[in-house]
Length: 157
Image (cartoon, rainbow, N blue to C red; front, side, top):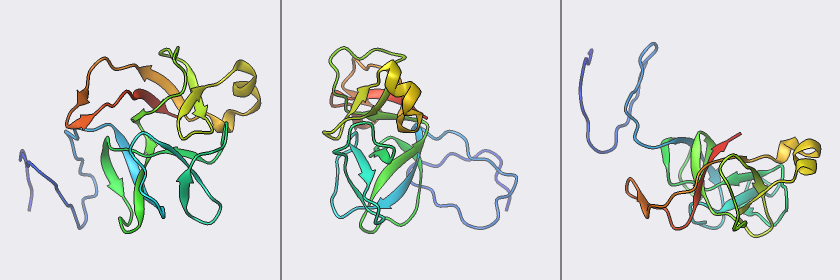
């Protein structure tokens, strides 16, 4: 069955062969995947892989295994059971440590489950630890249906 112009409100599940087809109009920003976690972390927290397939709150400065829990995904893959949504690509809201964060700054994990700006030396010596670049510092309280809660936007790397 071919669909030309159909508007669907709510959730949409697509199955079958859709080769050559595209989905337009996703409202949210990032692409995410479910990852196993024994705990439920709030969106915007930075988590890291524990080496056993689980995500834990990040306690490592400049971790190369860091990821961000997201509530702004437009596409989410994986198995939801005992999992949390982790941003894989796109733009995501995240909590930050630095009071003087600016658009364009490069960020990595800190040791409290947030991001922090990276020094020039860190960017040179540890490029694998770059989580993203600050793209916006919101002055609004909600984005879509999601509360901003003092988070900033970063473009994931």
